[in-house]
Amino acid sequence: MDKNSIFGIILIAGILIIWGVIQAPNKKEMEARKRMMDSLAVVQSQKQSDSVATDKPAFQTIPVVTSPDSVSTKKLQDELGDFSASAIGENRFFSIENDLIRLVISTRGGRPYSVELKKYKTFDRKPVILFNGDSTQFGIAFYSQNKAISTNQLYFRPGDTIPGKTIGSISDSLTMRLVVDDSRYIEYRYVLEPESYMVNFRMQLVGMKDIVTRDPSSLDLNWEINVPQHEQLKKNEMQYTSLYYRHFKEDVEYFRASKSEQTENIPTQVEWVGFKNQFFSSVILADYAFSNAMLKSADLPETSKYLKNFRAEVGLPFERLDNETIKMKMFFGPNKFKLLKKYKIYKLENLVSVGKGVIRWINQLVIIPIFDWLSRFIGNYGIIILLLTIIIKIGLLPLTYKSYLSQARMKVLKPQVDELSHKFPKGKELEKQQATMALYKKAGVSPMGGCLPMLLQFPILFAMFRFFPTSIELRQEGFLWAKDLSTYDAIISWHQAIPVLGNHISLFTLLMTISTIVSMKMSDTSSSTQQIPGMKTMMYIMPVMFMFMLNNFSAGLTYYYFLANMITIGQNYLFKQFVDEKEILRKMEEKKAKPVKKSKFQQRLEDMAKQSGYRTTKPAKRK
Image (tube, one colour):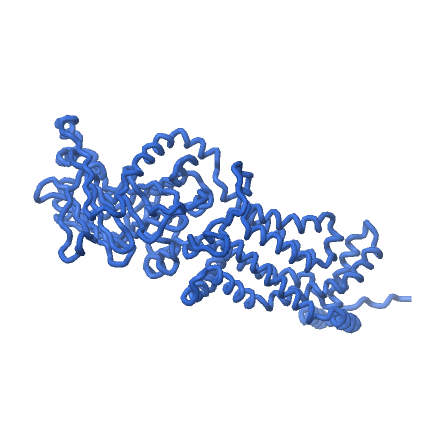
């Protein structure tokens, strides 16, 4: 392996190390928040037990009654005005569902109380609940008679299901109404689309034009949830848990998952806001656009079973009509690229973290289509990754061969380069470098010939680095000893975690490290490592560093790197059988014997100089 190849490997390592440092959570900031959030975490833990079990009927009532005796009626009247009667009620829970999700709605706030994805389980085989409990907030805020009103704290009345939408005891629609009187009310209507993760949500404001004061052009919709942990390793899941949003008809943006707290005030229109973790998302989408948005994200304590707290305050256009309807949609489902791609107008596929720029293009246009195509015929994802690796390595074969050929040329020139090292002693490094470059030029060898093909392969390596950890298709899919290709495949575990490495050793990561060392050993020409002190040692330290960095990552990723190394070893063995180094040396010696041709650019410069009357050679000295 020449020094340019080694430089390429070091460059990869440097980029990955910097990326790991940037992505690492800020522990000092989390500790600063810990005291403030501990009490909230305790309450949330208690409320988790309130989730509706999967065997409960569609209309499950859990009474939580607020007695009028415990609250001063006069005080409520002073605080809430026309809405004071709705401050007292019975908290009941109703569920609507289809084959994919179960949405539980509370009469307190008329809000989504919890969402269960029926076809998915957590790492410990419990139902996947996207959010749950009284920690959730969903309601509109406005002023009525100069009194601050929040519908999230008021009691709604459940309405009838929509005719024709009830199958057996399961309903896929529900109406909730916040009543002032018969002619003035706010109504929420939830309708689940069949075999879909999308919920149609309609908010109807009847007779509100005179009740809502301070003449606002928009109403504030407040939505807040705590995102629970679903995967085995919380640290990894945190890296992909973030708040996403899309500006009106523009690009999708997101908060950096590594920051413990973030706030964004957006005065312009927003199409949707999404609360996303590694494999699942909750998204609210405007029928046209929200007027504005204020978005917040905050890490929760490490001891909490929740990852982050997300909050969005979006503006709903309010035209002060007698009967006004605001339409929205809610998406509660997996971050599956093929599924989200169906909602083209929203660009929801951006919720899948497959990188930026050229990395994203490689994943979208090459990796994901091949992966999905193979999935149509093969059910074993370990075999799919194997075939995907073979296809990619075949596609990269010309670059791999060119890199090997360049290394072979450098190898046969090594004795001549060593002679130059003896010819030019210390202190004449510049002359030696010039002589070496002249030798390369005469022989027709480019020092960058082996490095550039390797650099061109880096986008593929980074694309895979982004693809595998976020591919929900690999989630809880086993292969050989790995029970779940979306997380690490530990063969040895211990209690006390080692920094970076963790508390286990992943077998595919270990195999990847060994195969990398073997590949380096086979391709090491010992030409450049002798010139740079300590470089040969560094060559074998680098794979160990990668082992520490990737030990907690997806087994699918390290399995792919292991396969890629093994195929590279096989390719290099075959190249060695067909590439004759003596023939390469003979051709280079023939080329060295030929006069060096001037480049077209250099020839044009000389022609221009002649036309201008300048000499291109030195004049003869006078006697």
